[in-house]
Picture (cartoon, one colour):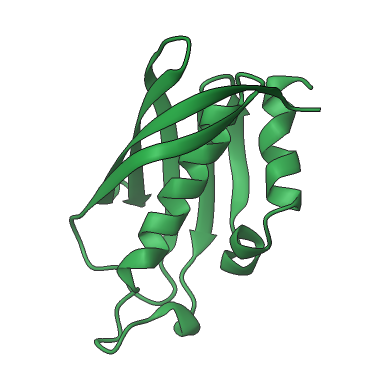
Length: 134
């Protein structure tokens, strides 16, 4: 399967990302940009977006970008820094860029932004399997 089509297939099979309202804005080999709007049911007890929301958006961008090389790729380590609080109605954009790839591992940096303001920084390591996307 052509690498840039893989994220669209992944999204069509991903009920959680669909529930989040994630949309793919841009996709090329090794890079993917996704977006979503924070809804009321995504807020925590302090009326801010739960940290898992920005994490999930970044993780989705990470997974989509990592799989554009045509092989099933799975995360083996991730971390996130929450830089700014996120509010209901915020439109968030996450862009994943593969910083380095070798035969089995890929290293990604994902910035989550509200407009031009970075609200979270996600780092991930992916393991690339031998299984092809079909």
